[in-house]
Image (cartoon, rainbow, N blue to C red; front, top):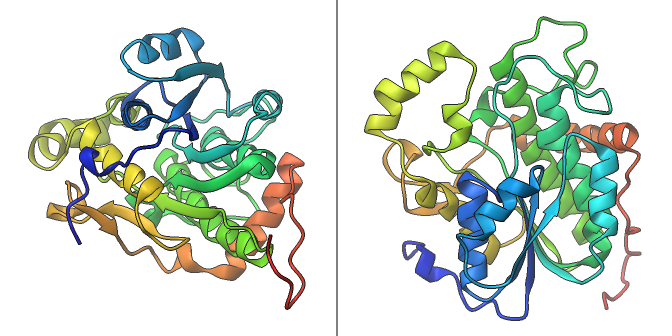
Length: 303
């Protein structure tokens, strides 16, 4: 497989893309690359001021719109404002290891933002989607465990990295279940996922875990990390590459942290269909948002 680079992104004239968290880091690089190739890109950001500053660094057709994934009212408002067909949704935004906090709807902050916010956004936009959904996970999903009885850490000691791992595992379970549901509905939309490896973005630099910050600054960032462009390549590869649905794309280089993206493995827990189904049901219950398409009857023809 040829090495995927920014030059691998094809002409996207006439398409529309939405990138969450597009004001900084990997999201900004992803949005910039898509816009440079002709896509109309909606920068879905919590801070429109930061979004406007990011947009000023891009060429092409970009528009800033407010989206706070930690507030389902904001998610619904954003989705209602998208009236045009959407070719690509990149679920990129995320939080990493903050202190214990909660969303506007009372969800644990990382699970609520990284998973539930994107779950609601995707299902609300599906009737207008005609291309792909790319959900950005993390290699940290391997350390994650889904506690369906206590997803918000109300009955167990809060562990920031454990909560992050749970949210990133939820991203992968969501992406897989979404592909199964799309296929059952006869939809041609593809659900993909990606992880950036170890990239020097604001997400790492703002971590509140002192031991993790020291490790990344003194060892990992200096020896193995790549810049935000390298970190965004797996997302772009998943967005435009010739790949089957439910592909998981990540770096395949040194320690799986650096450039040369392609299909990579996921943990056994991330491939658990029954857990994915139960997580989906819980997510519908918590968000009040359901998959919008009925399953196609056996033998029916997709149109």
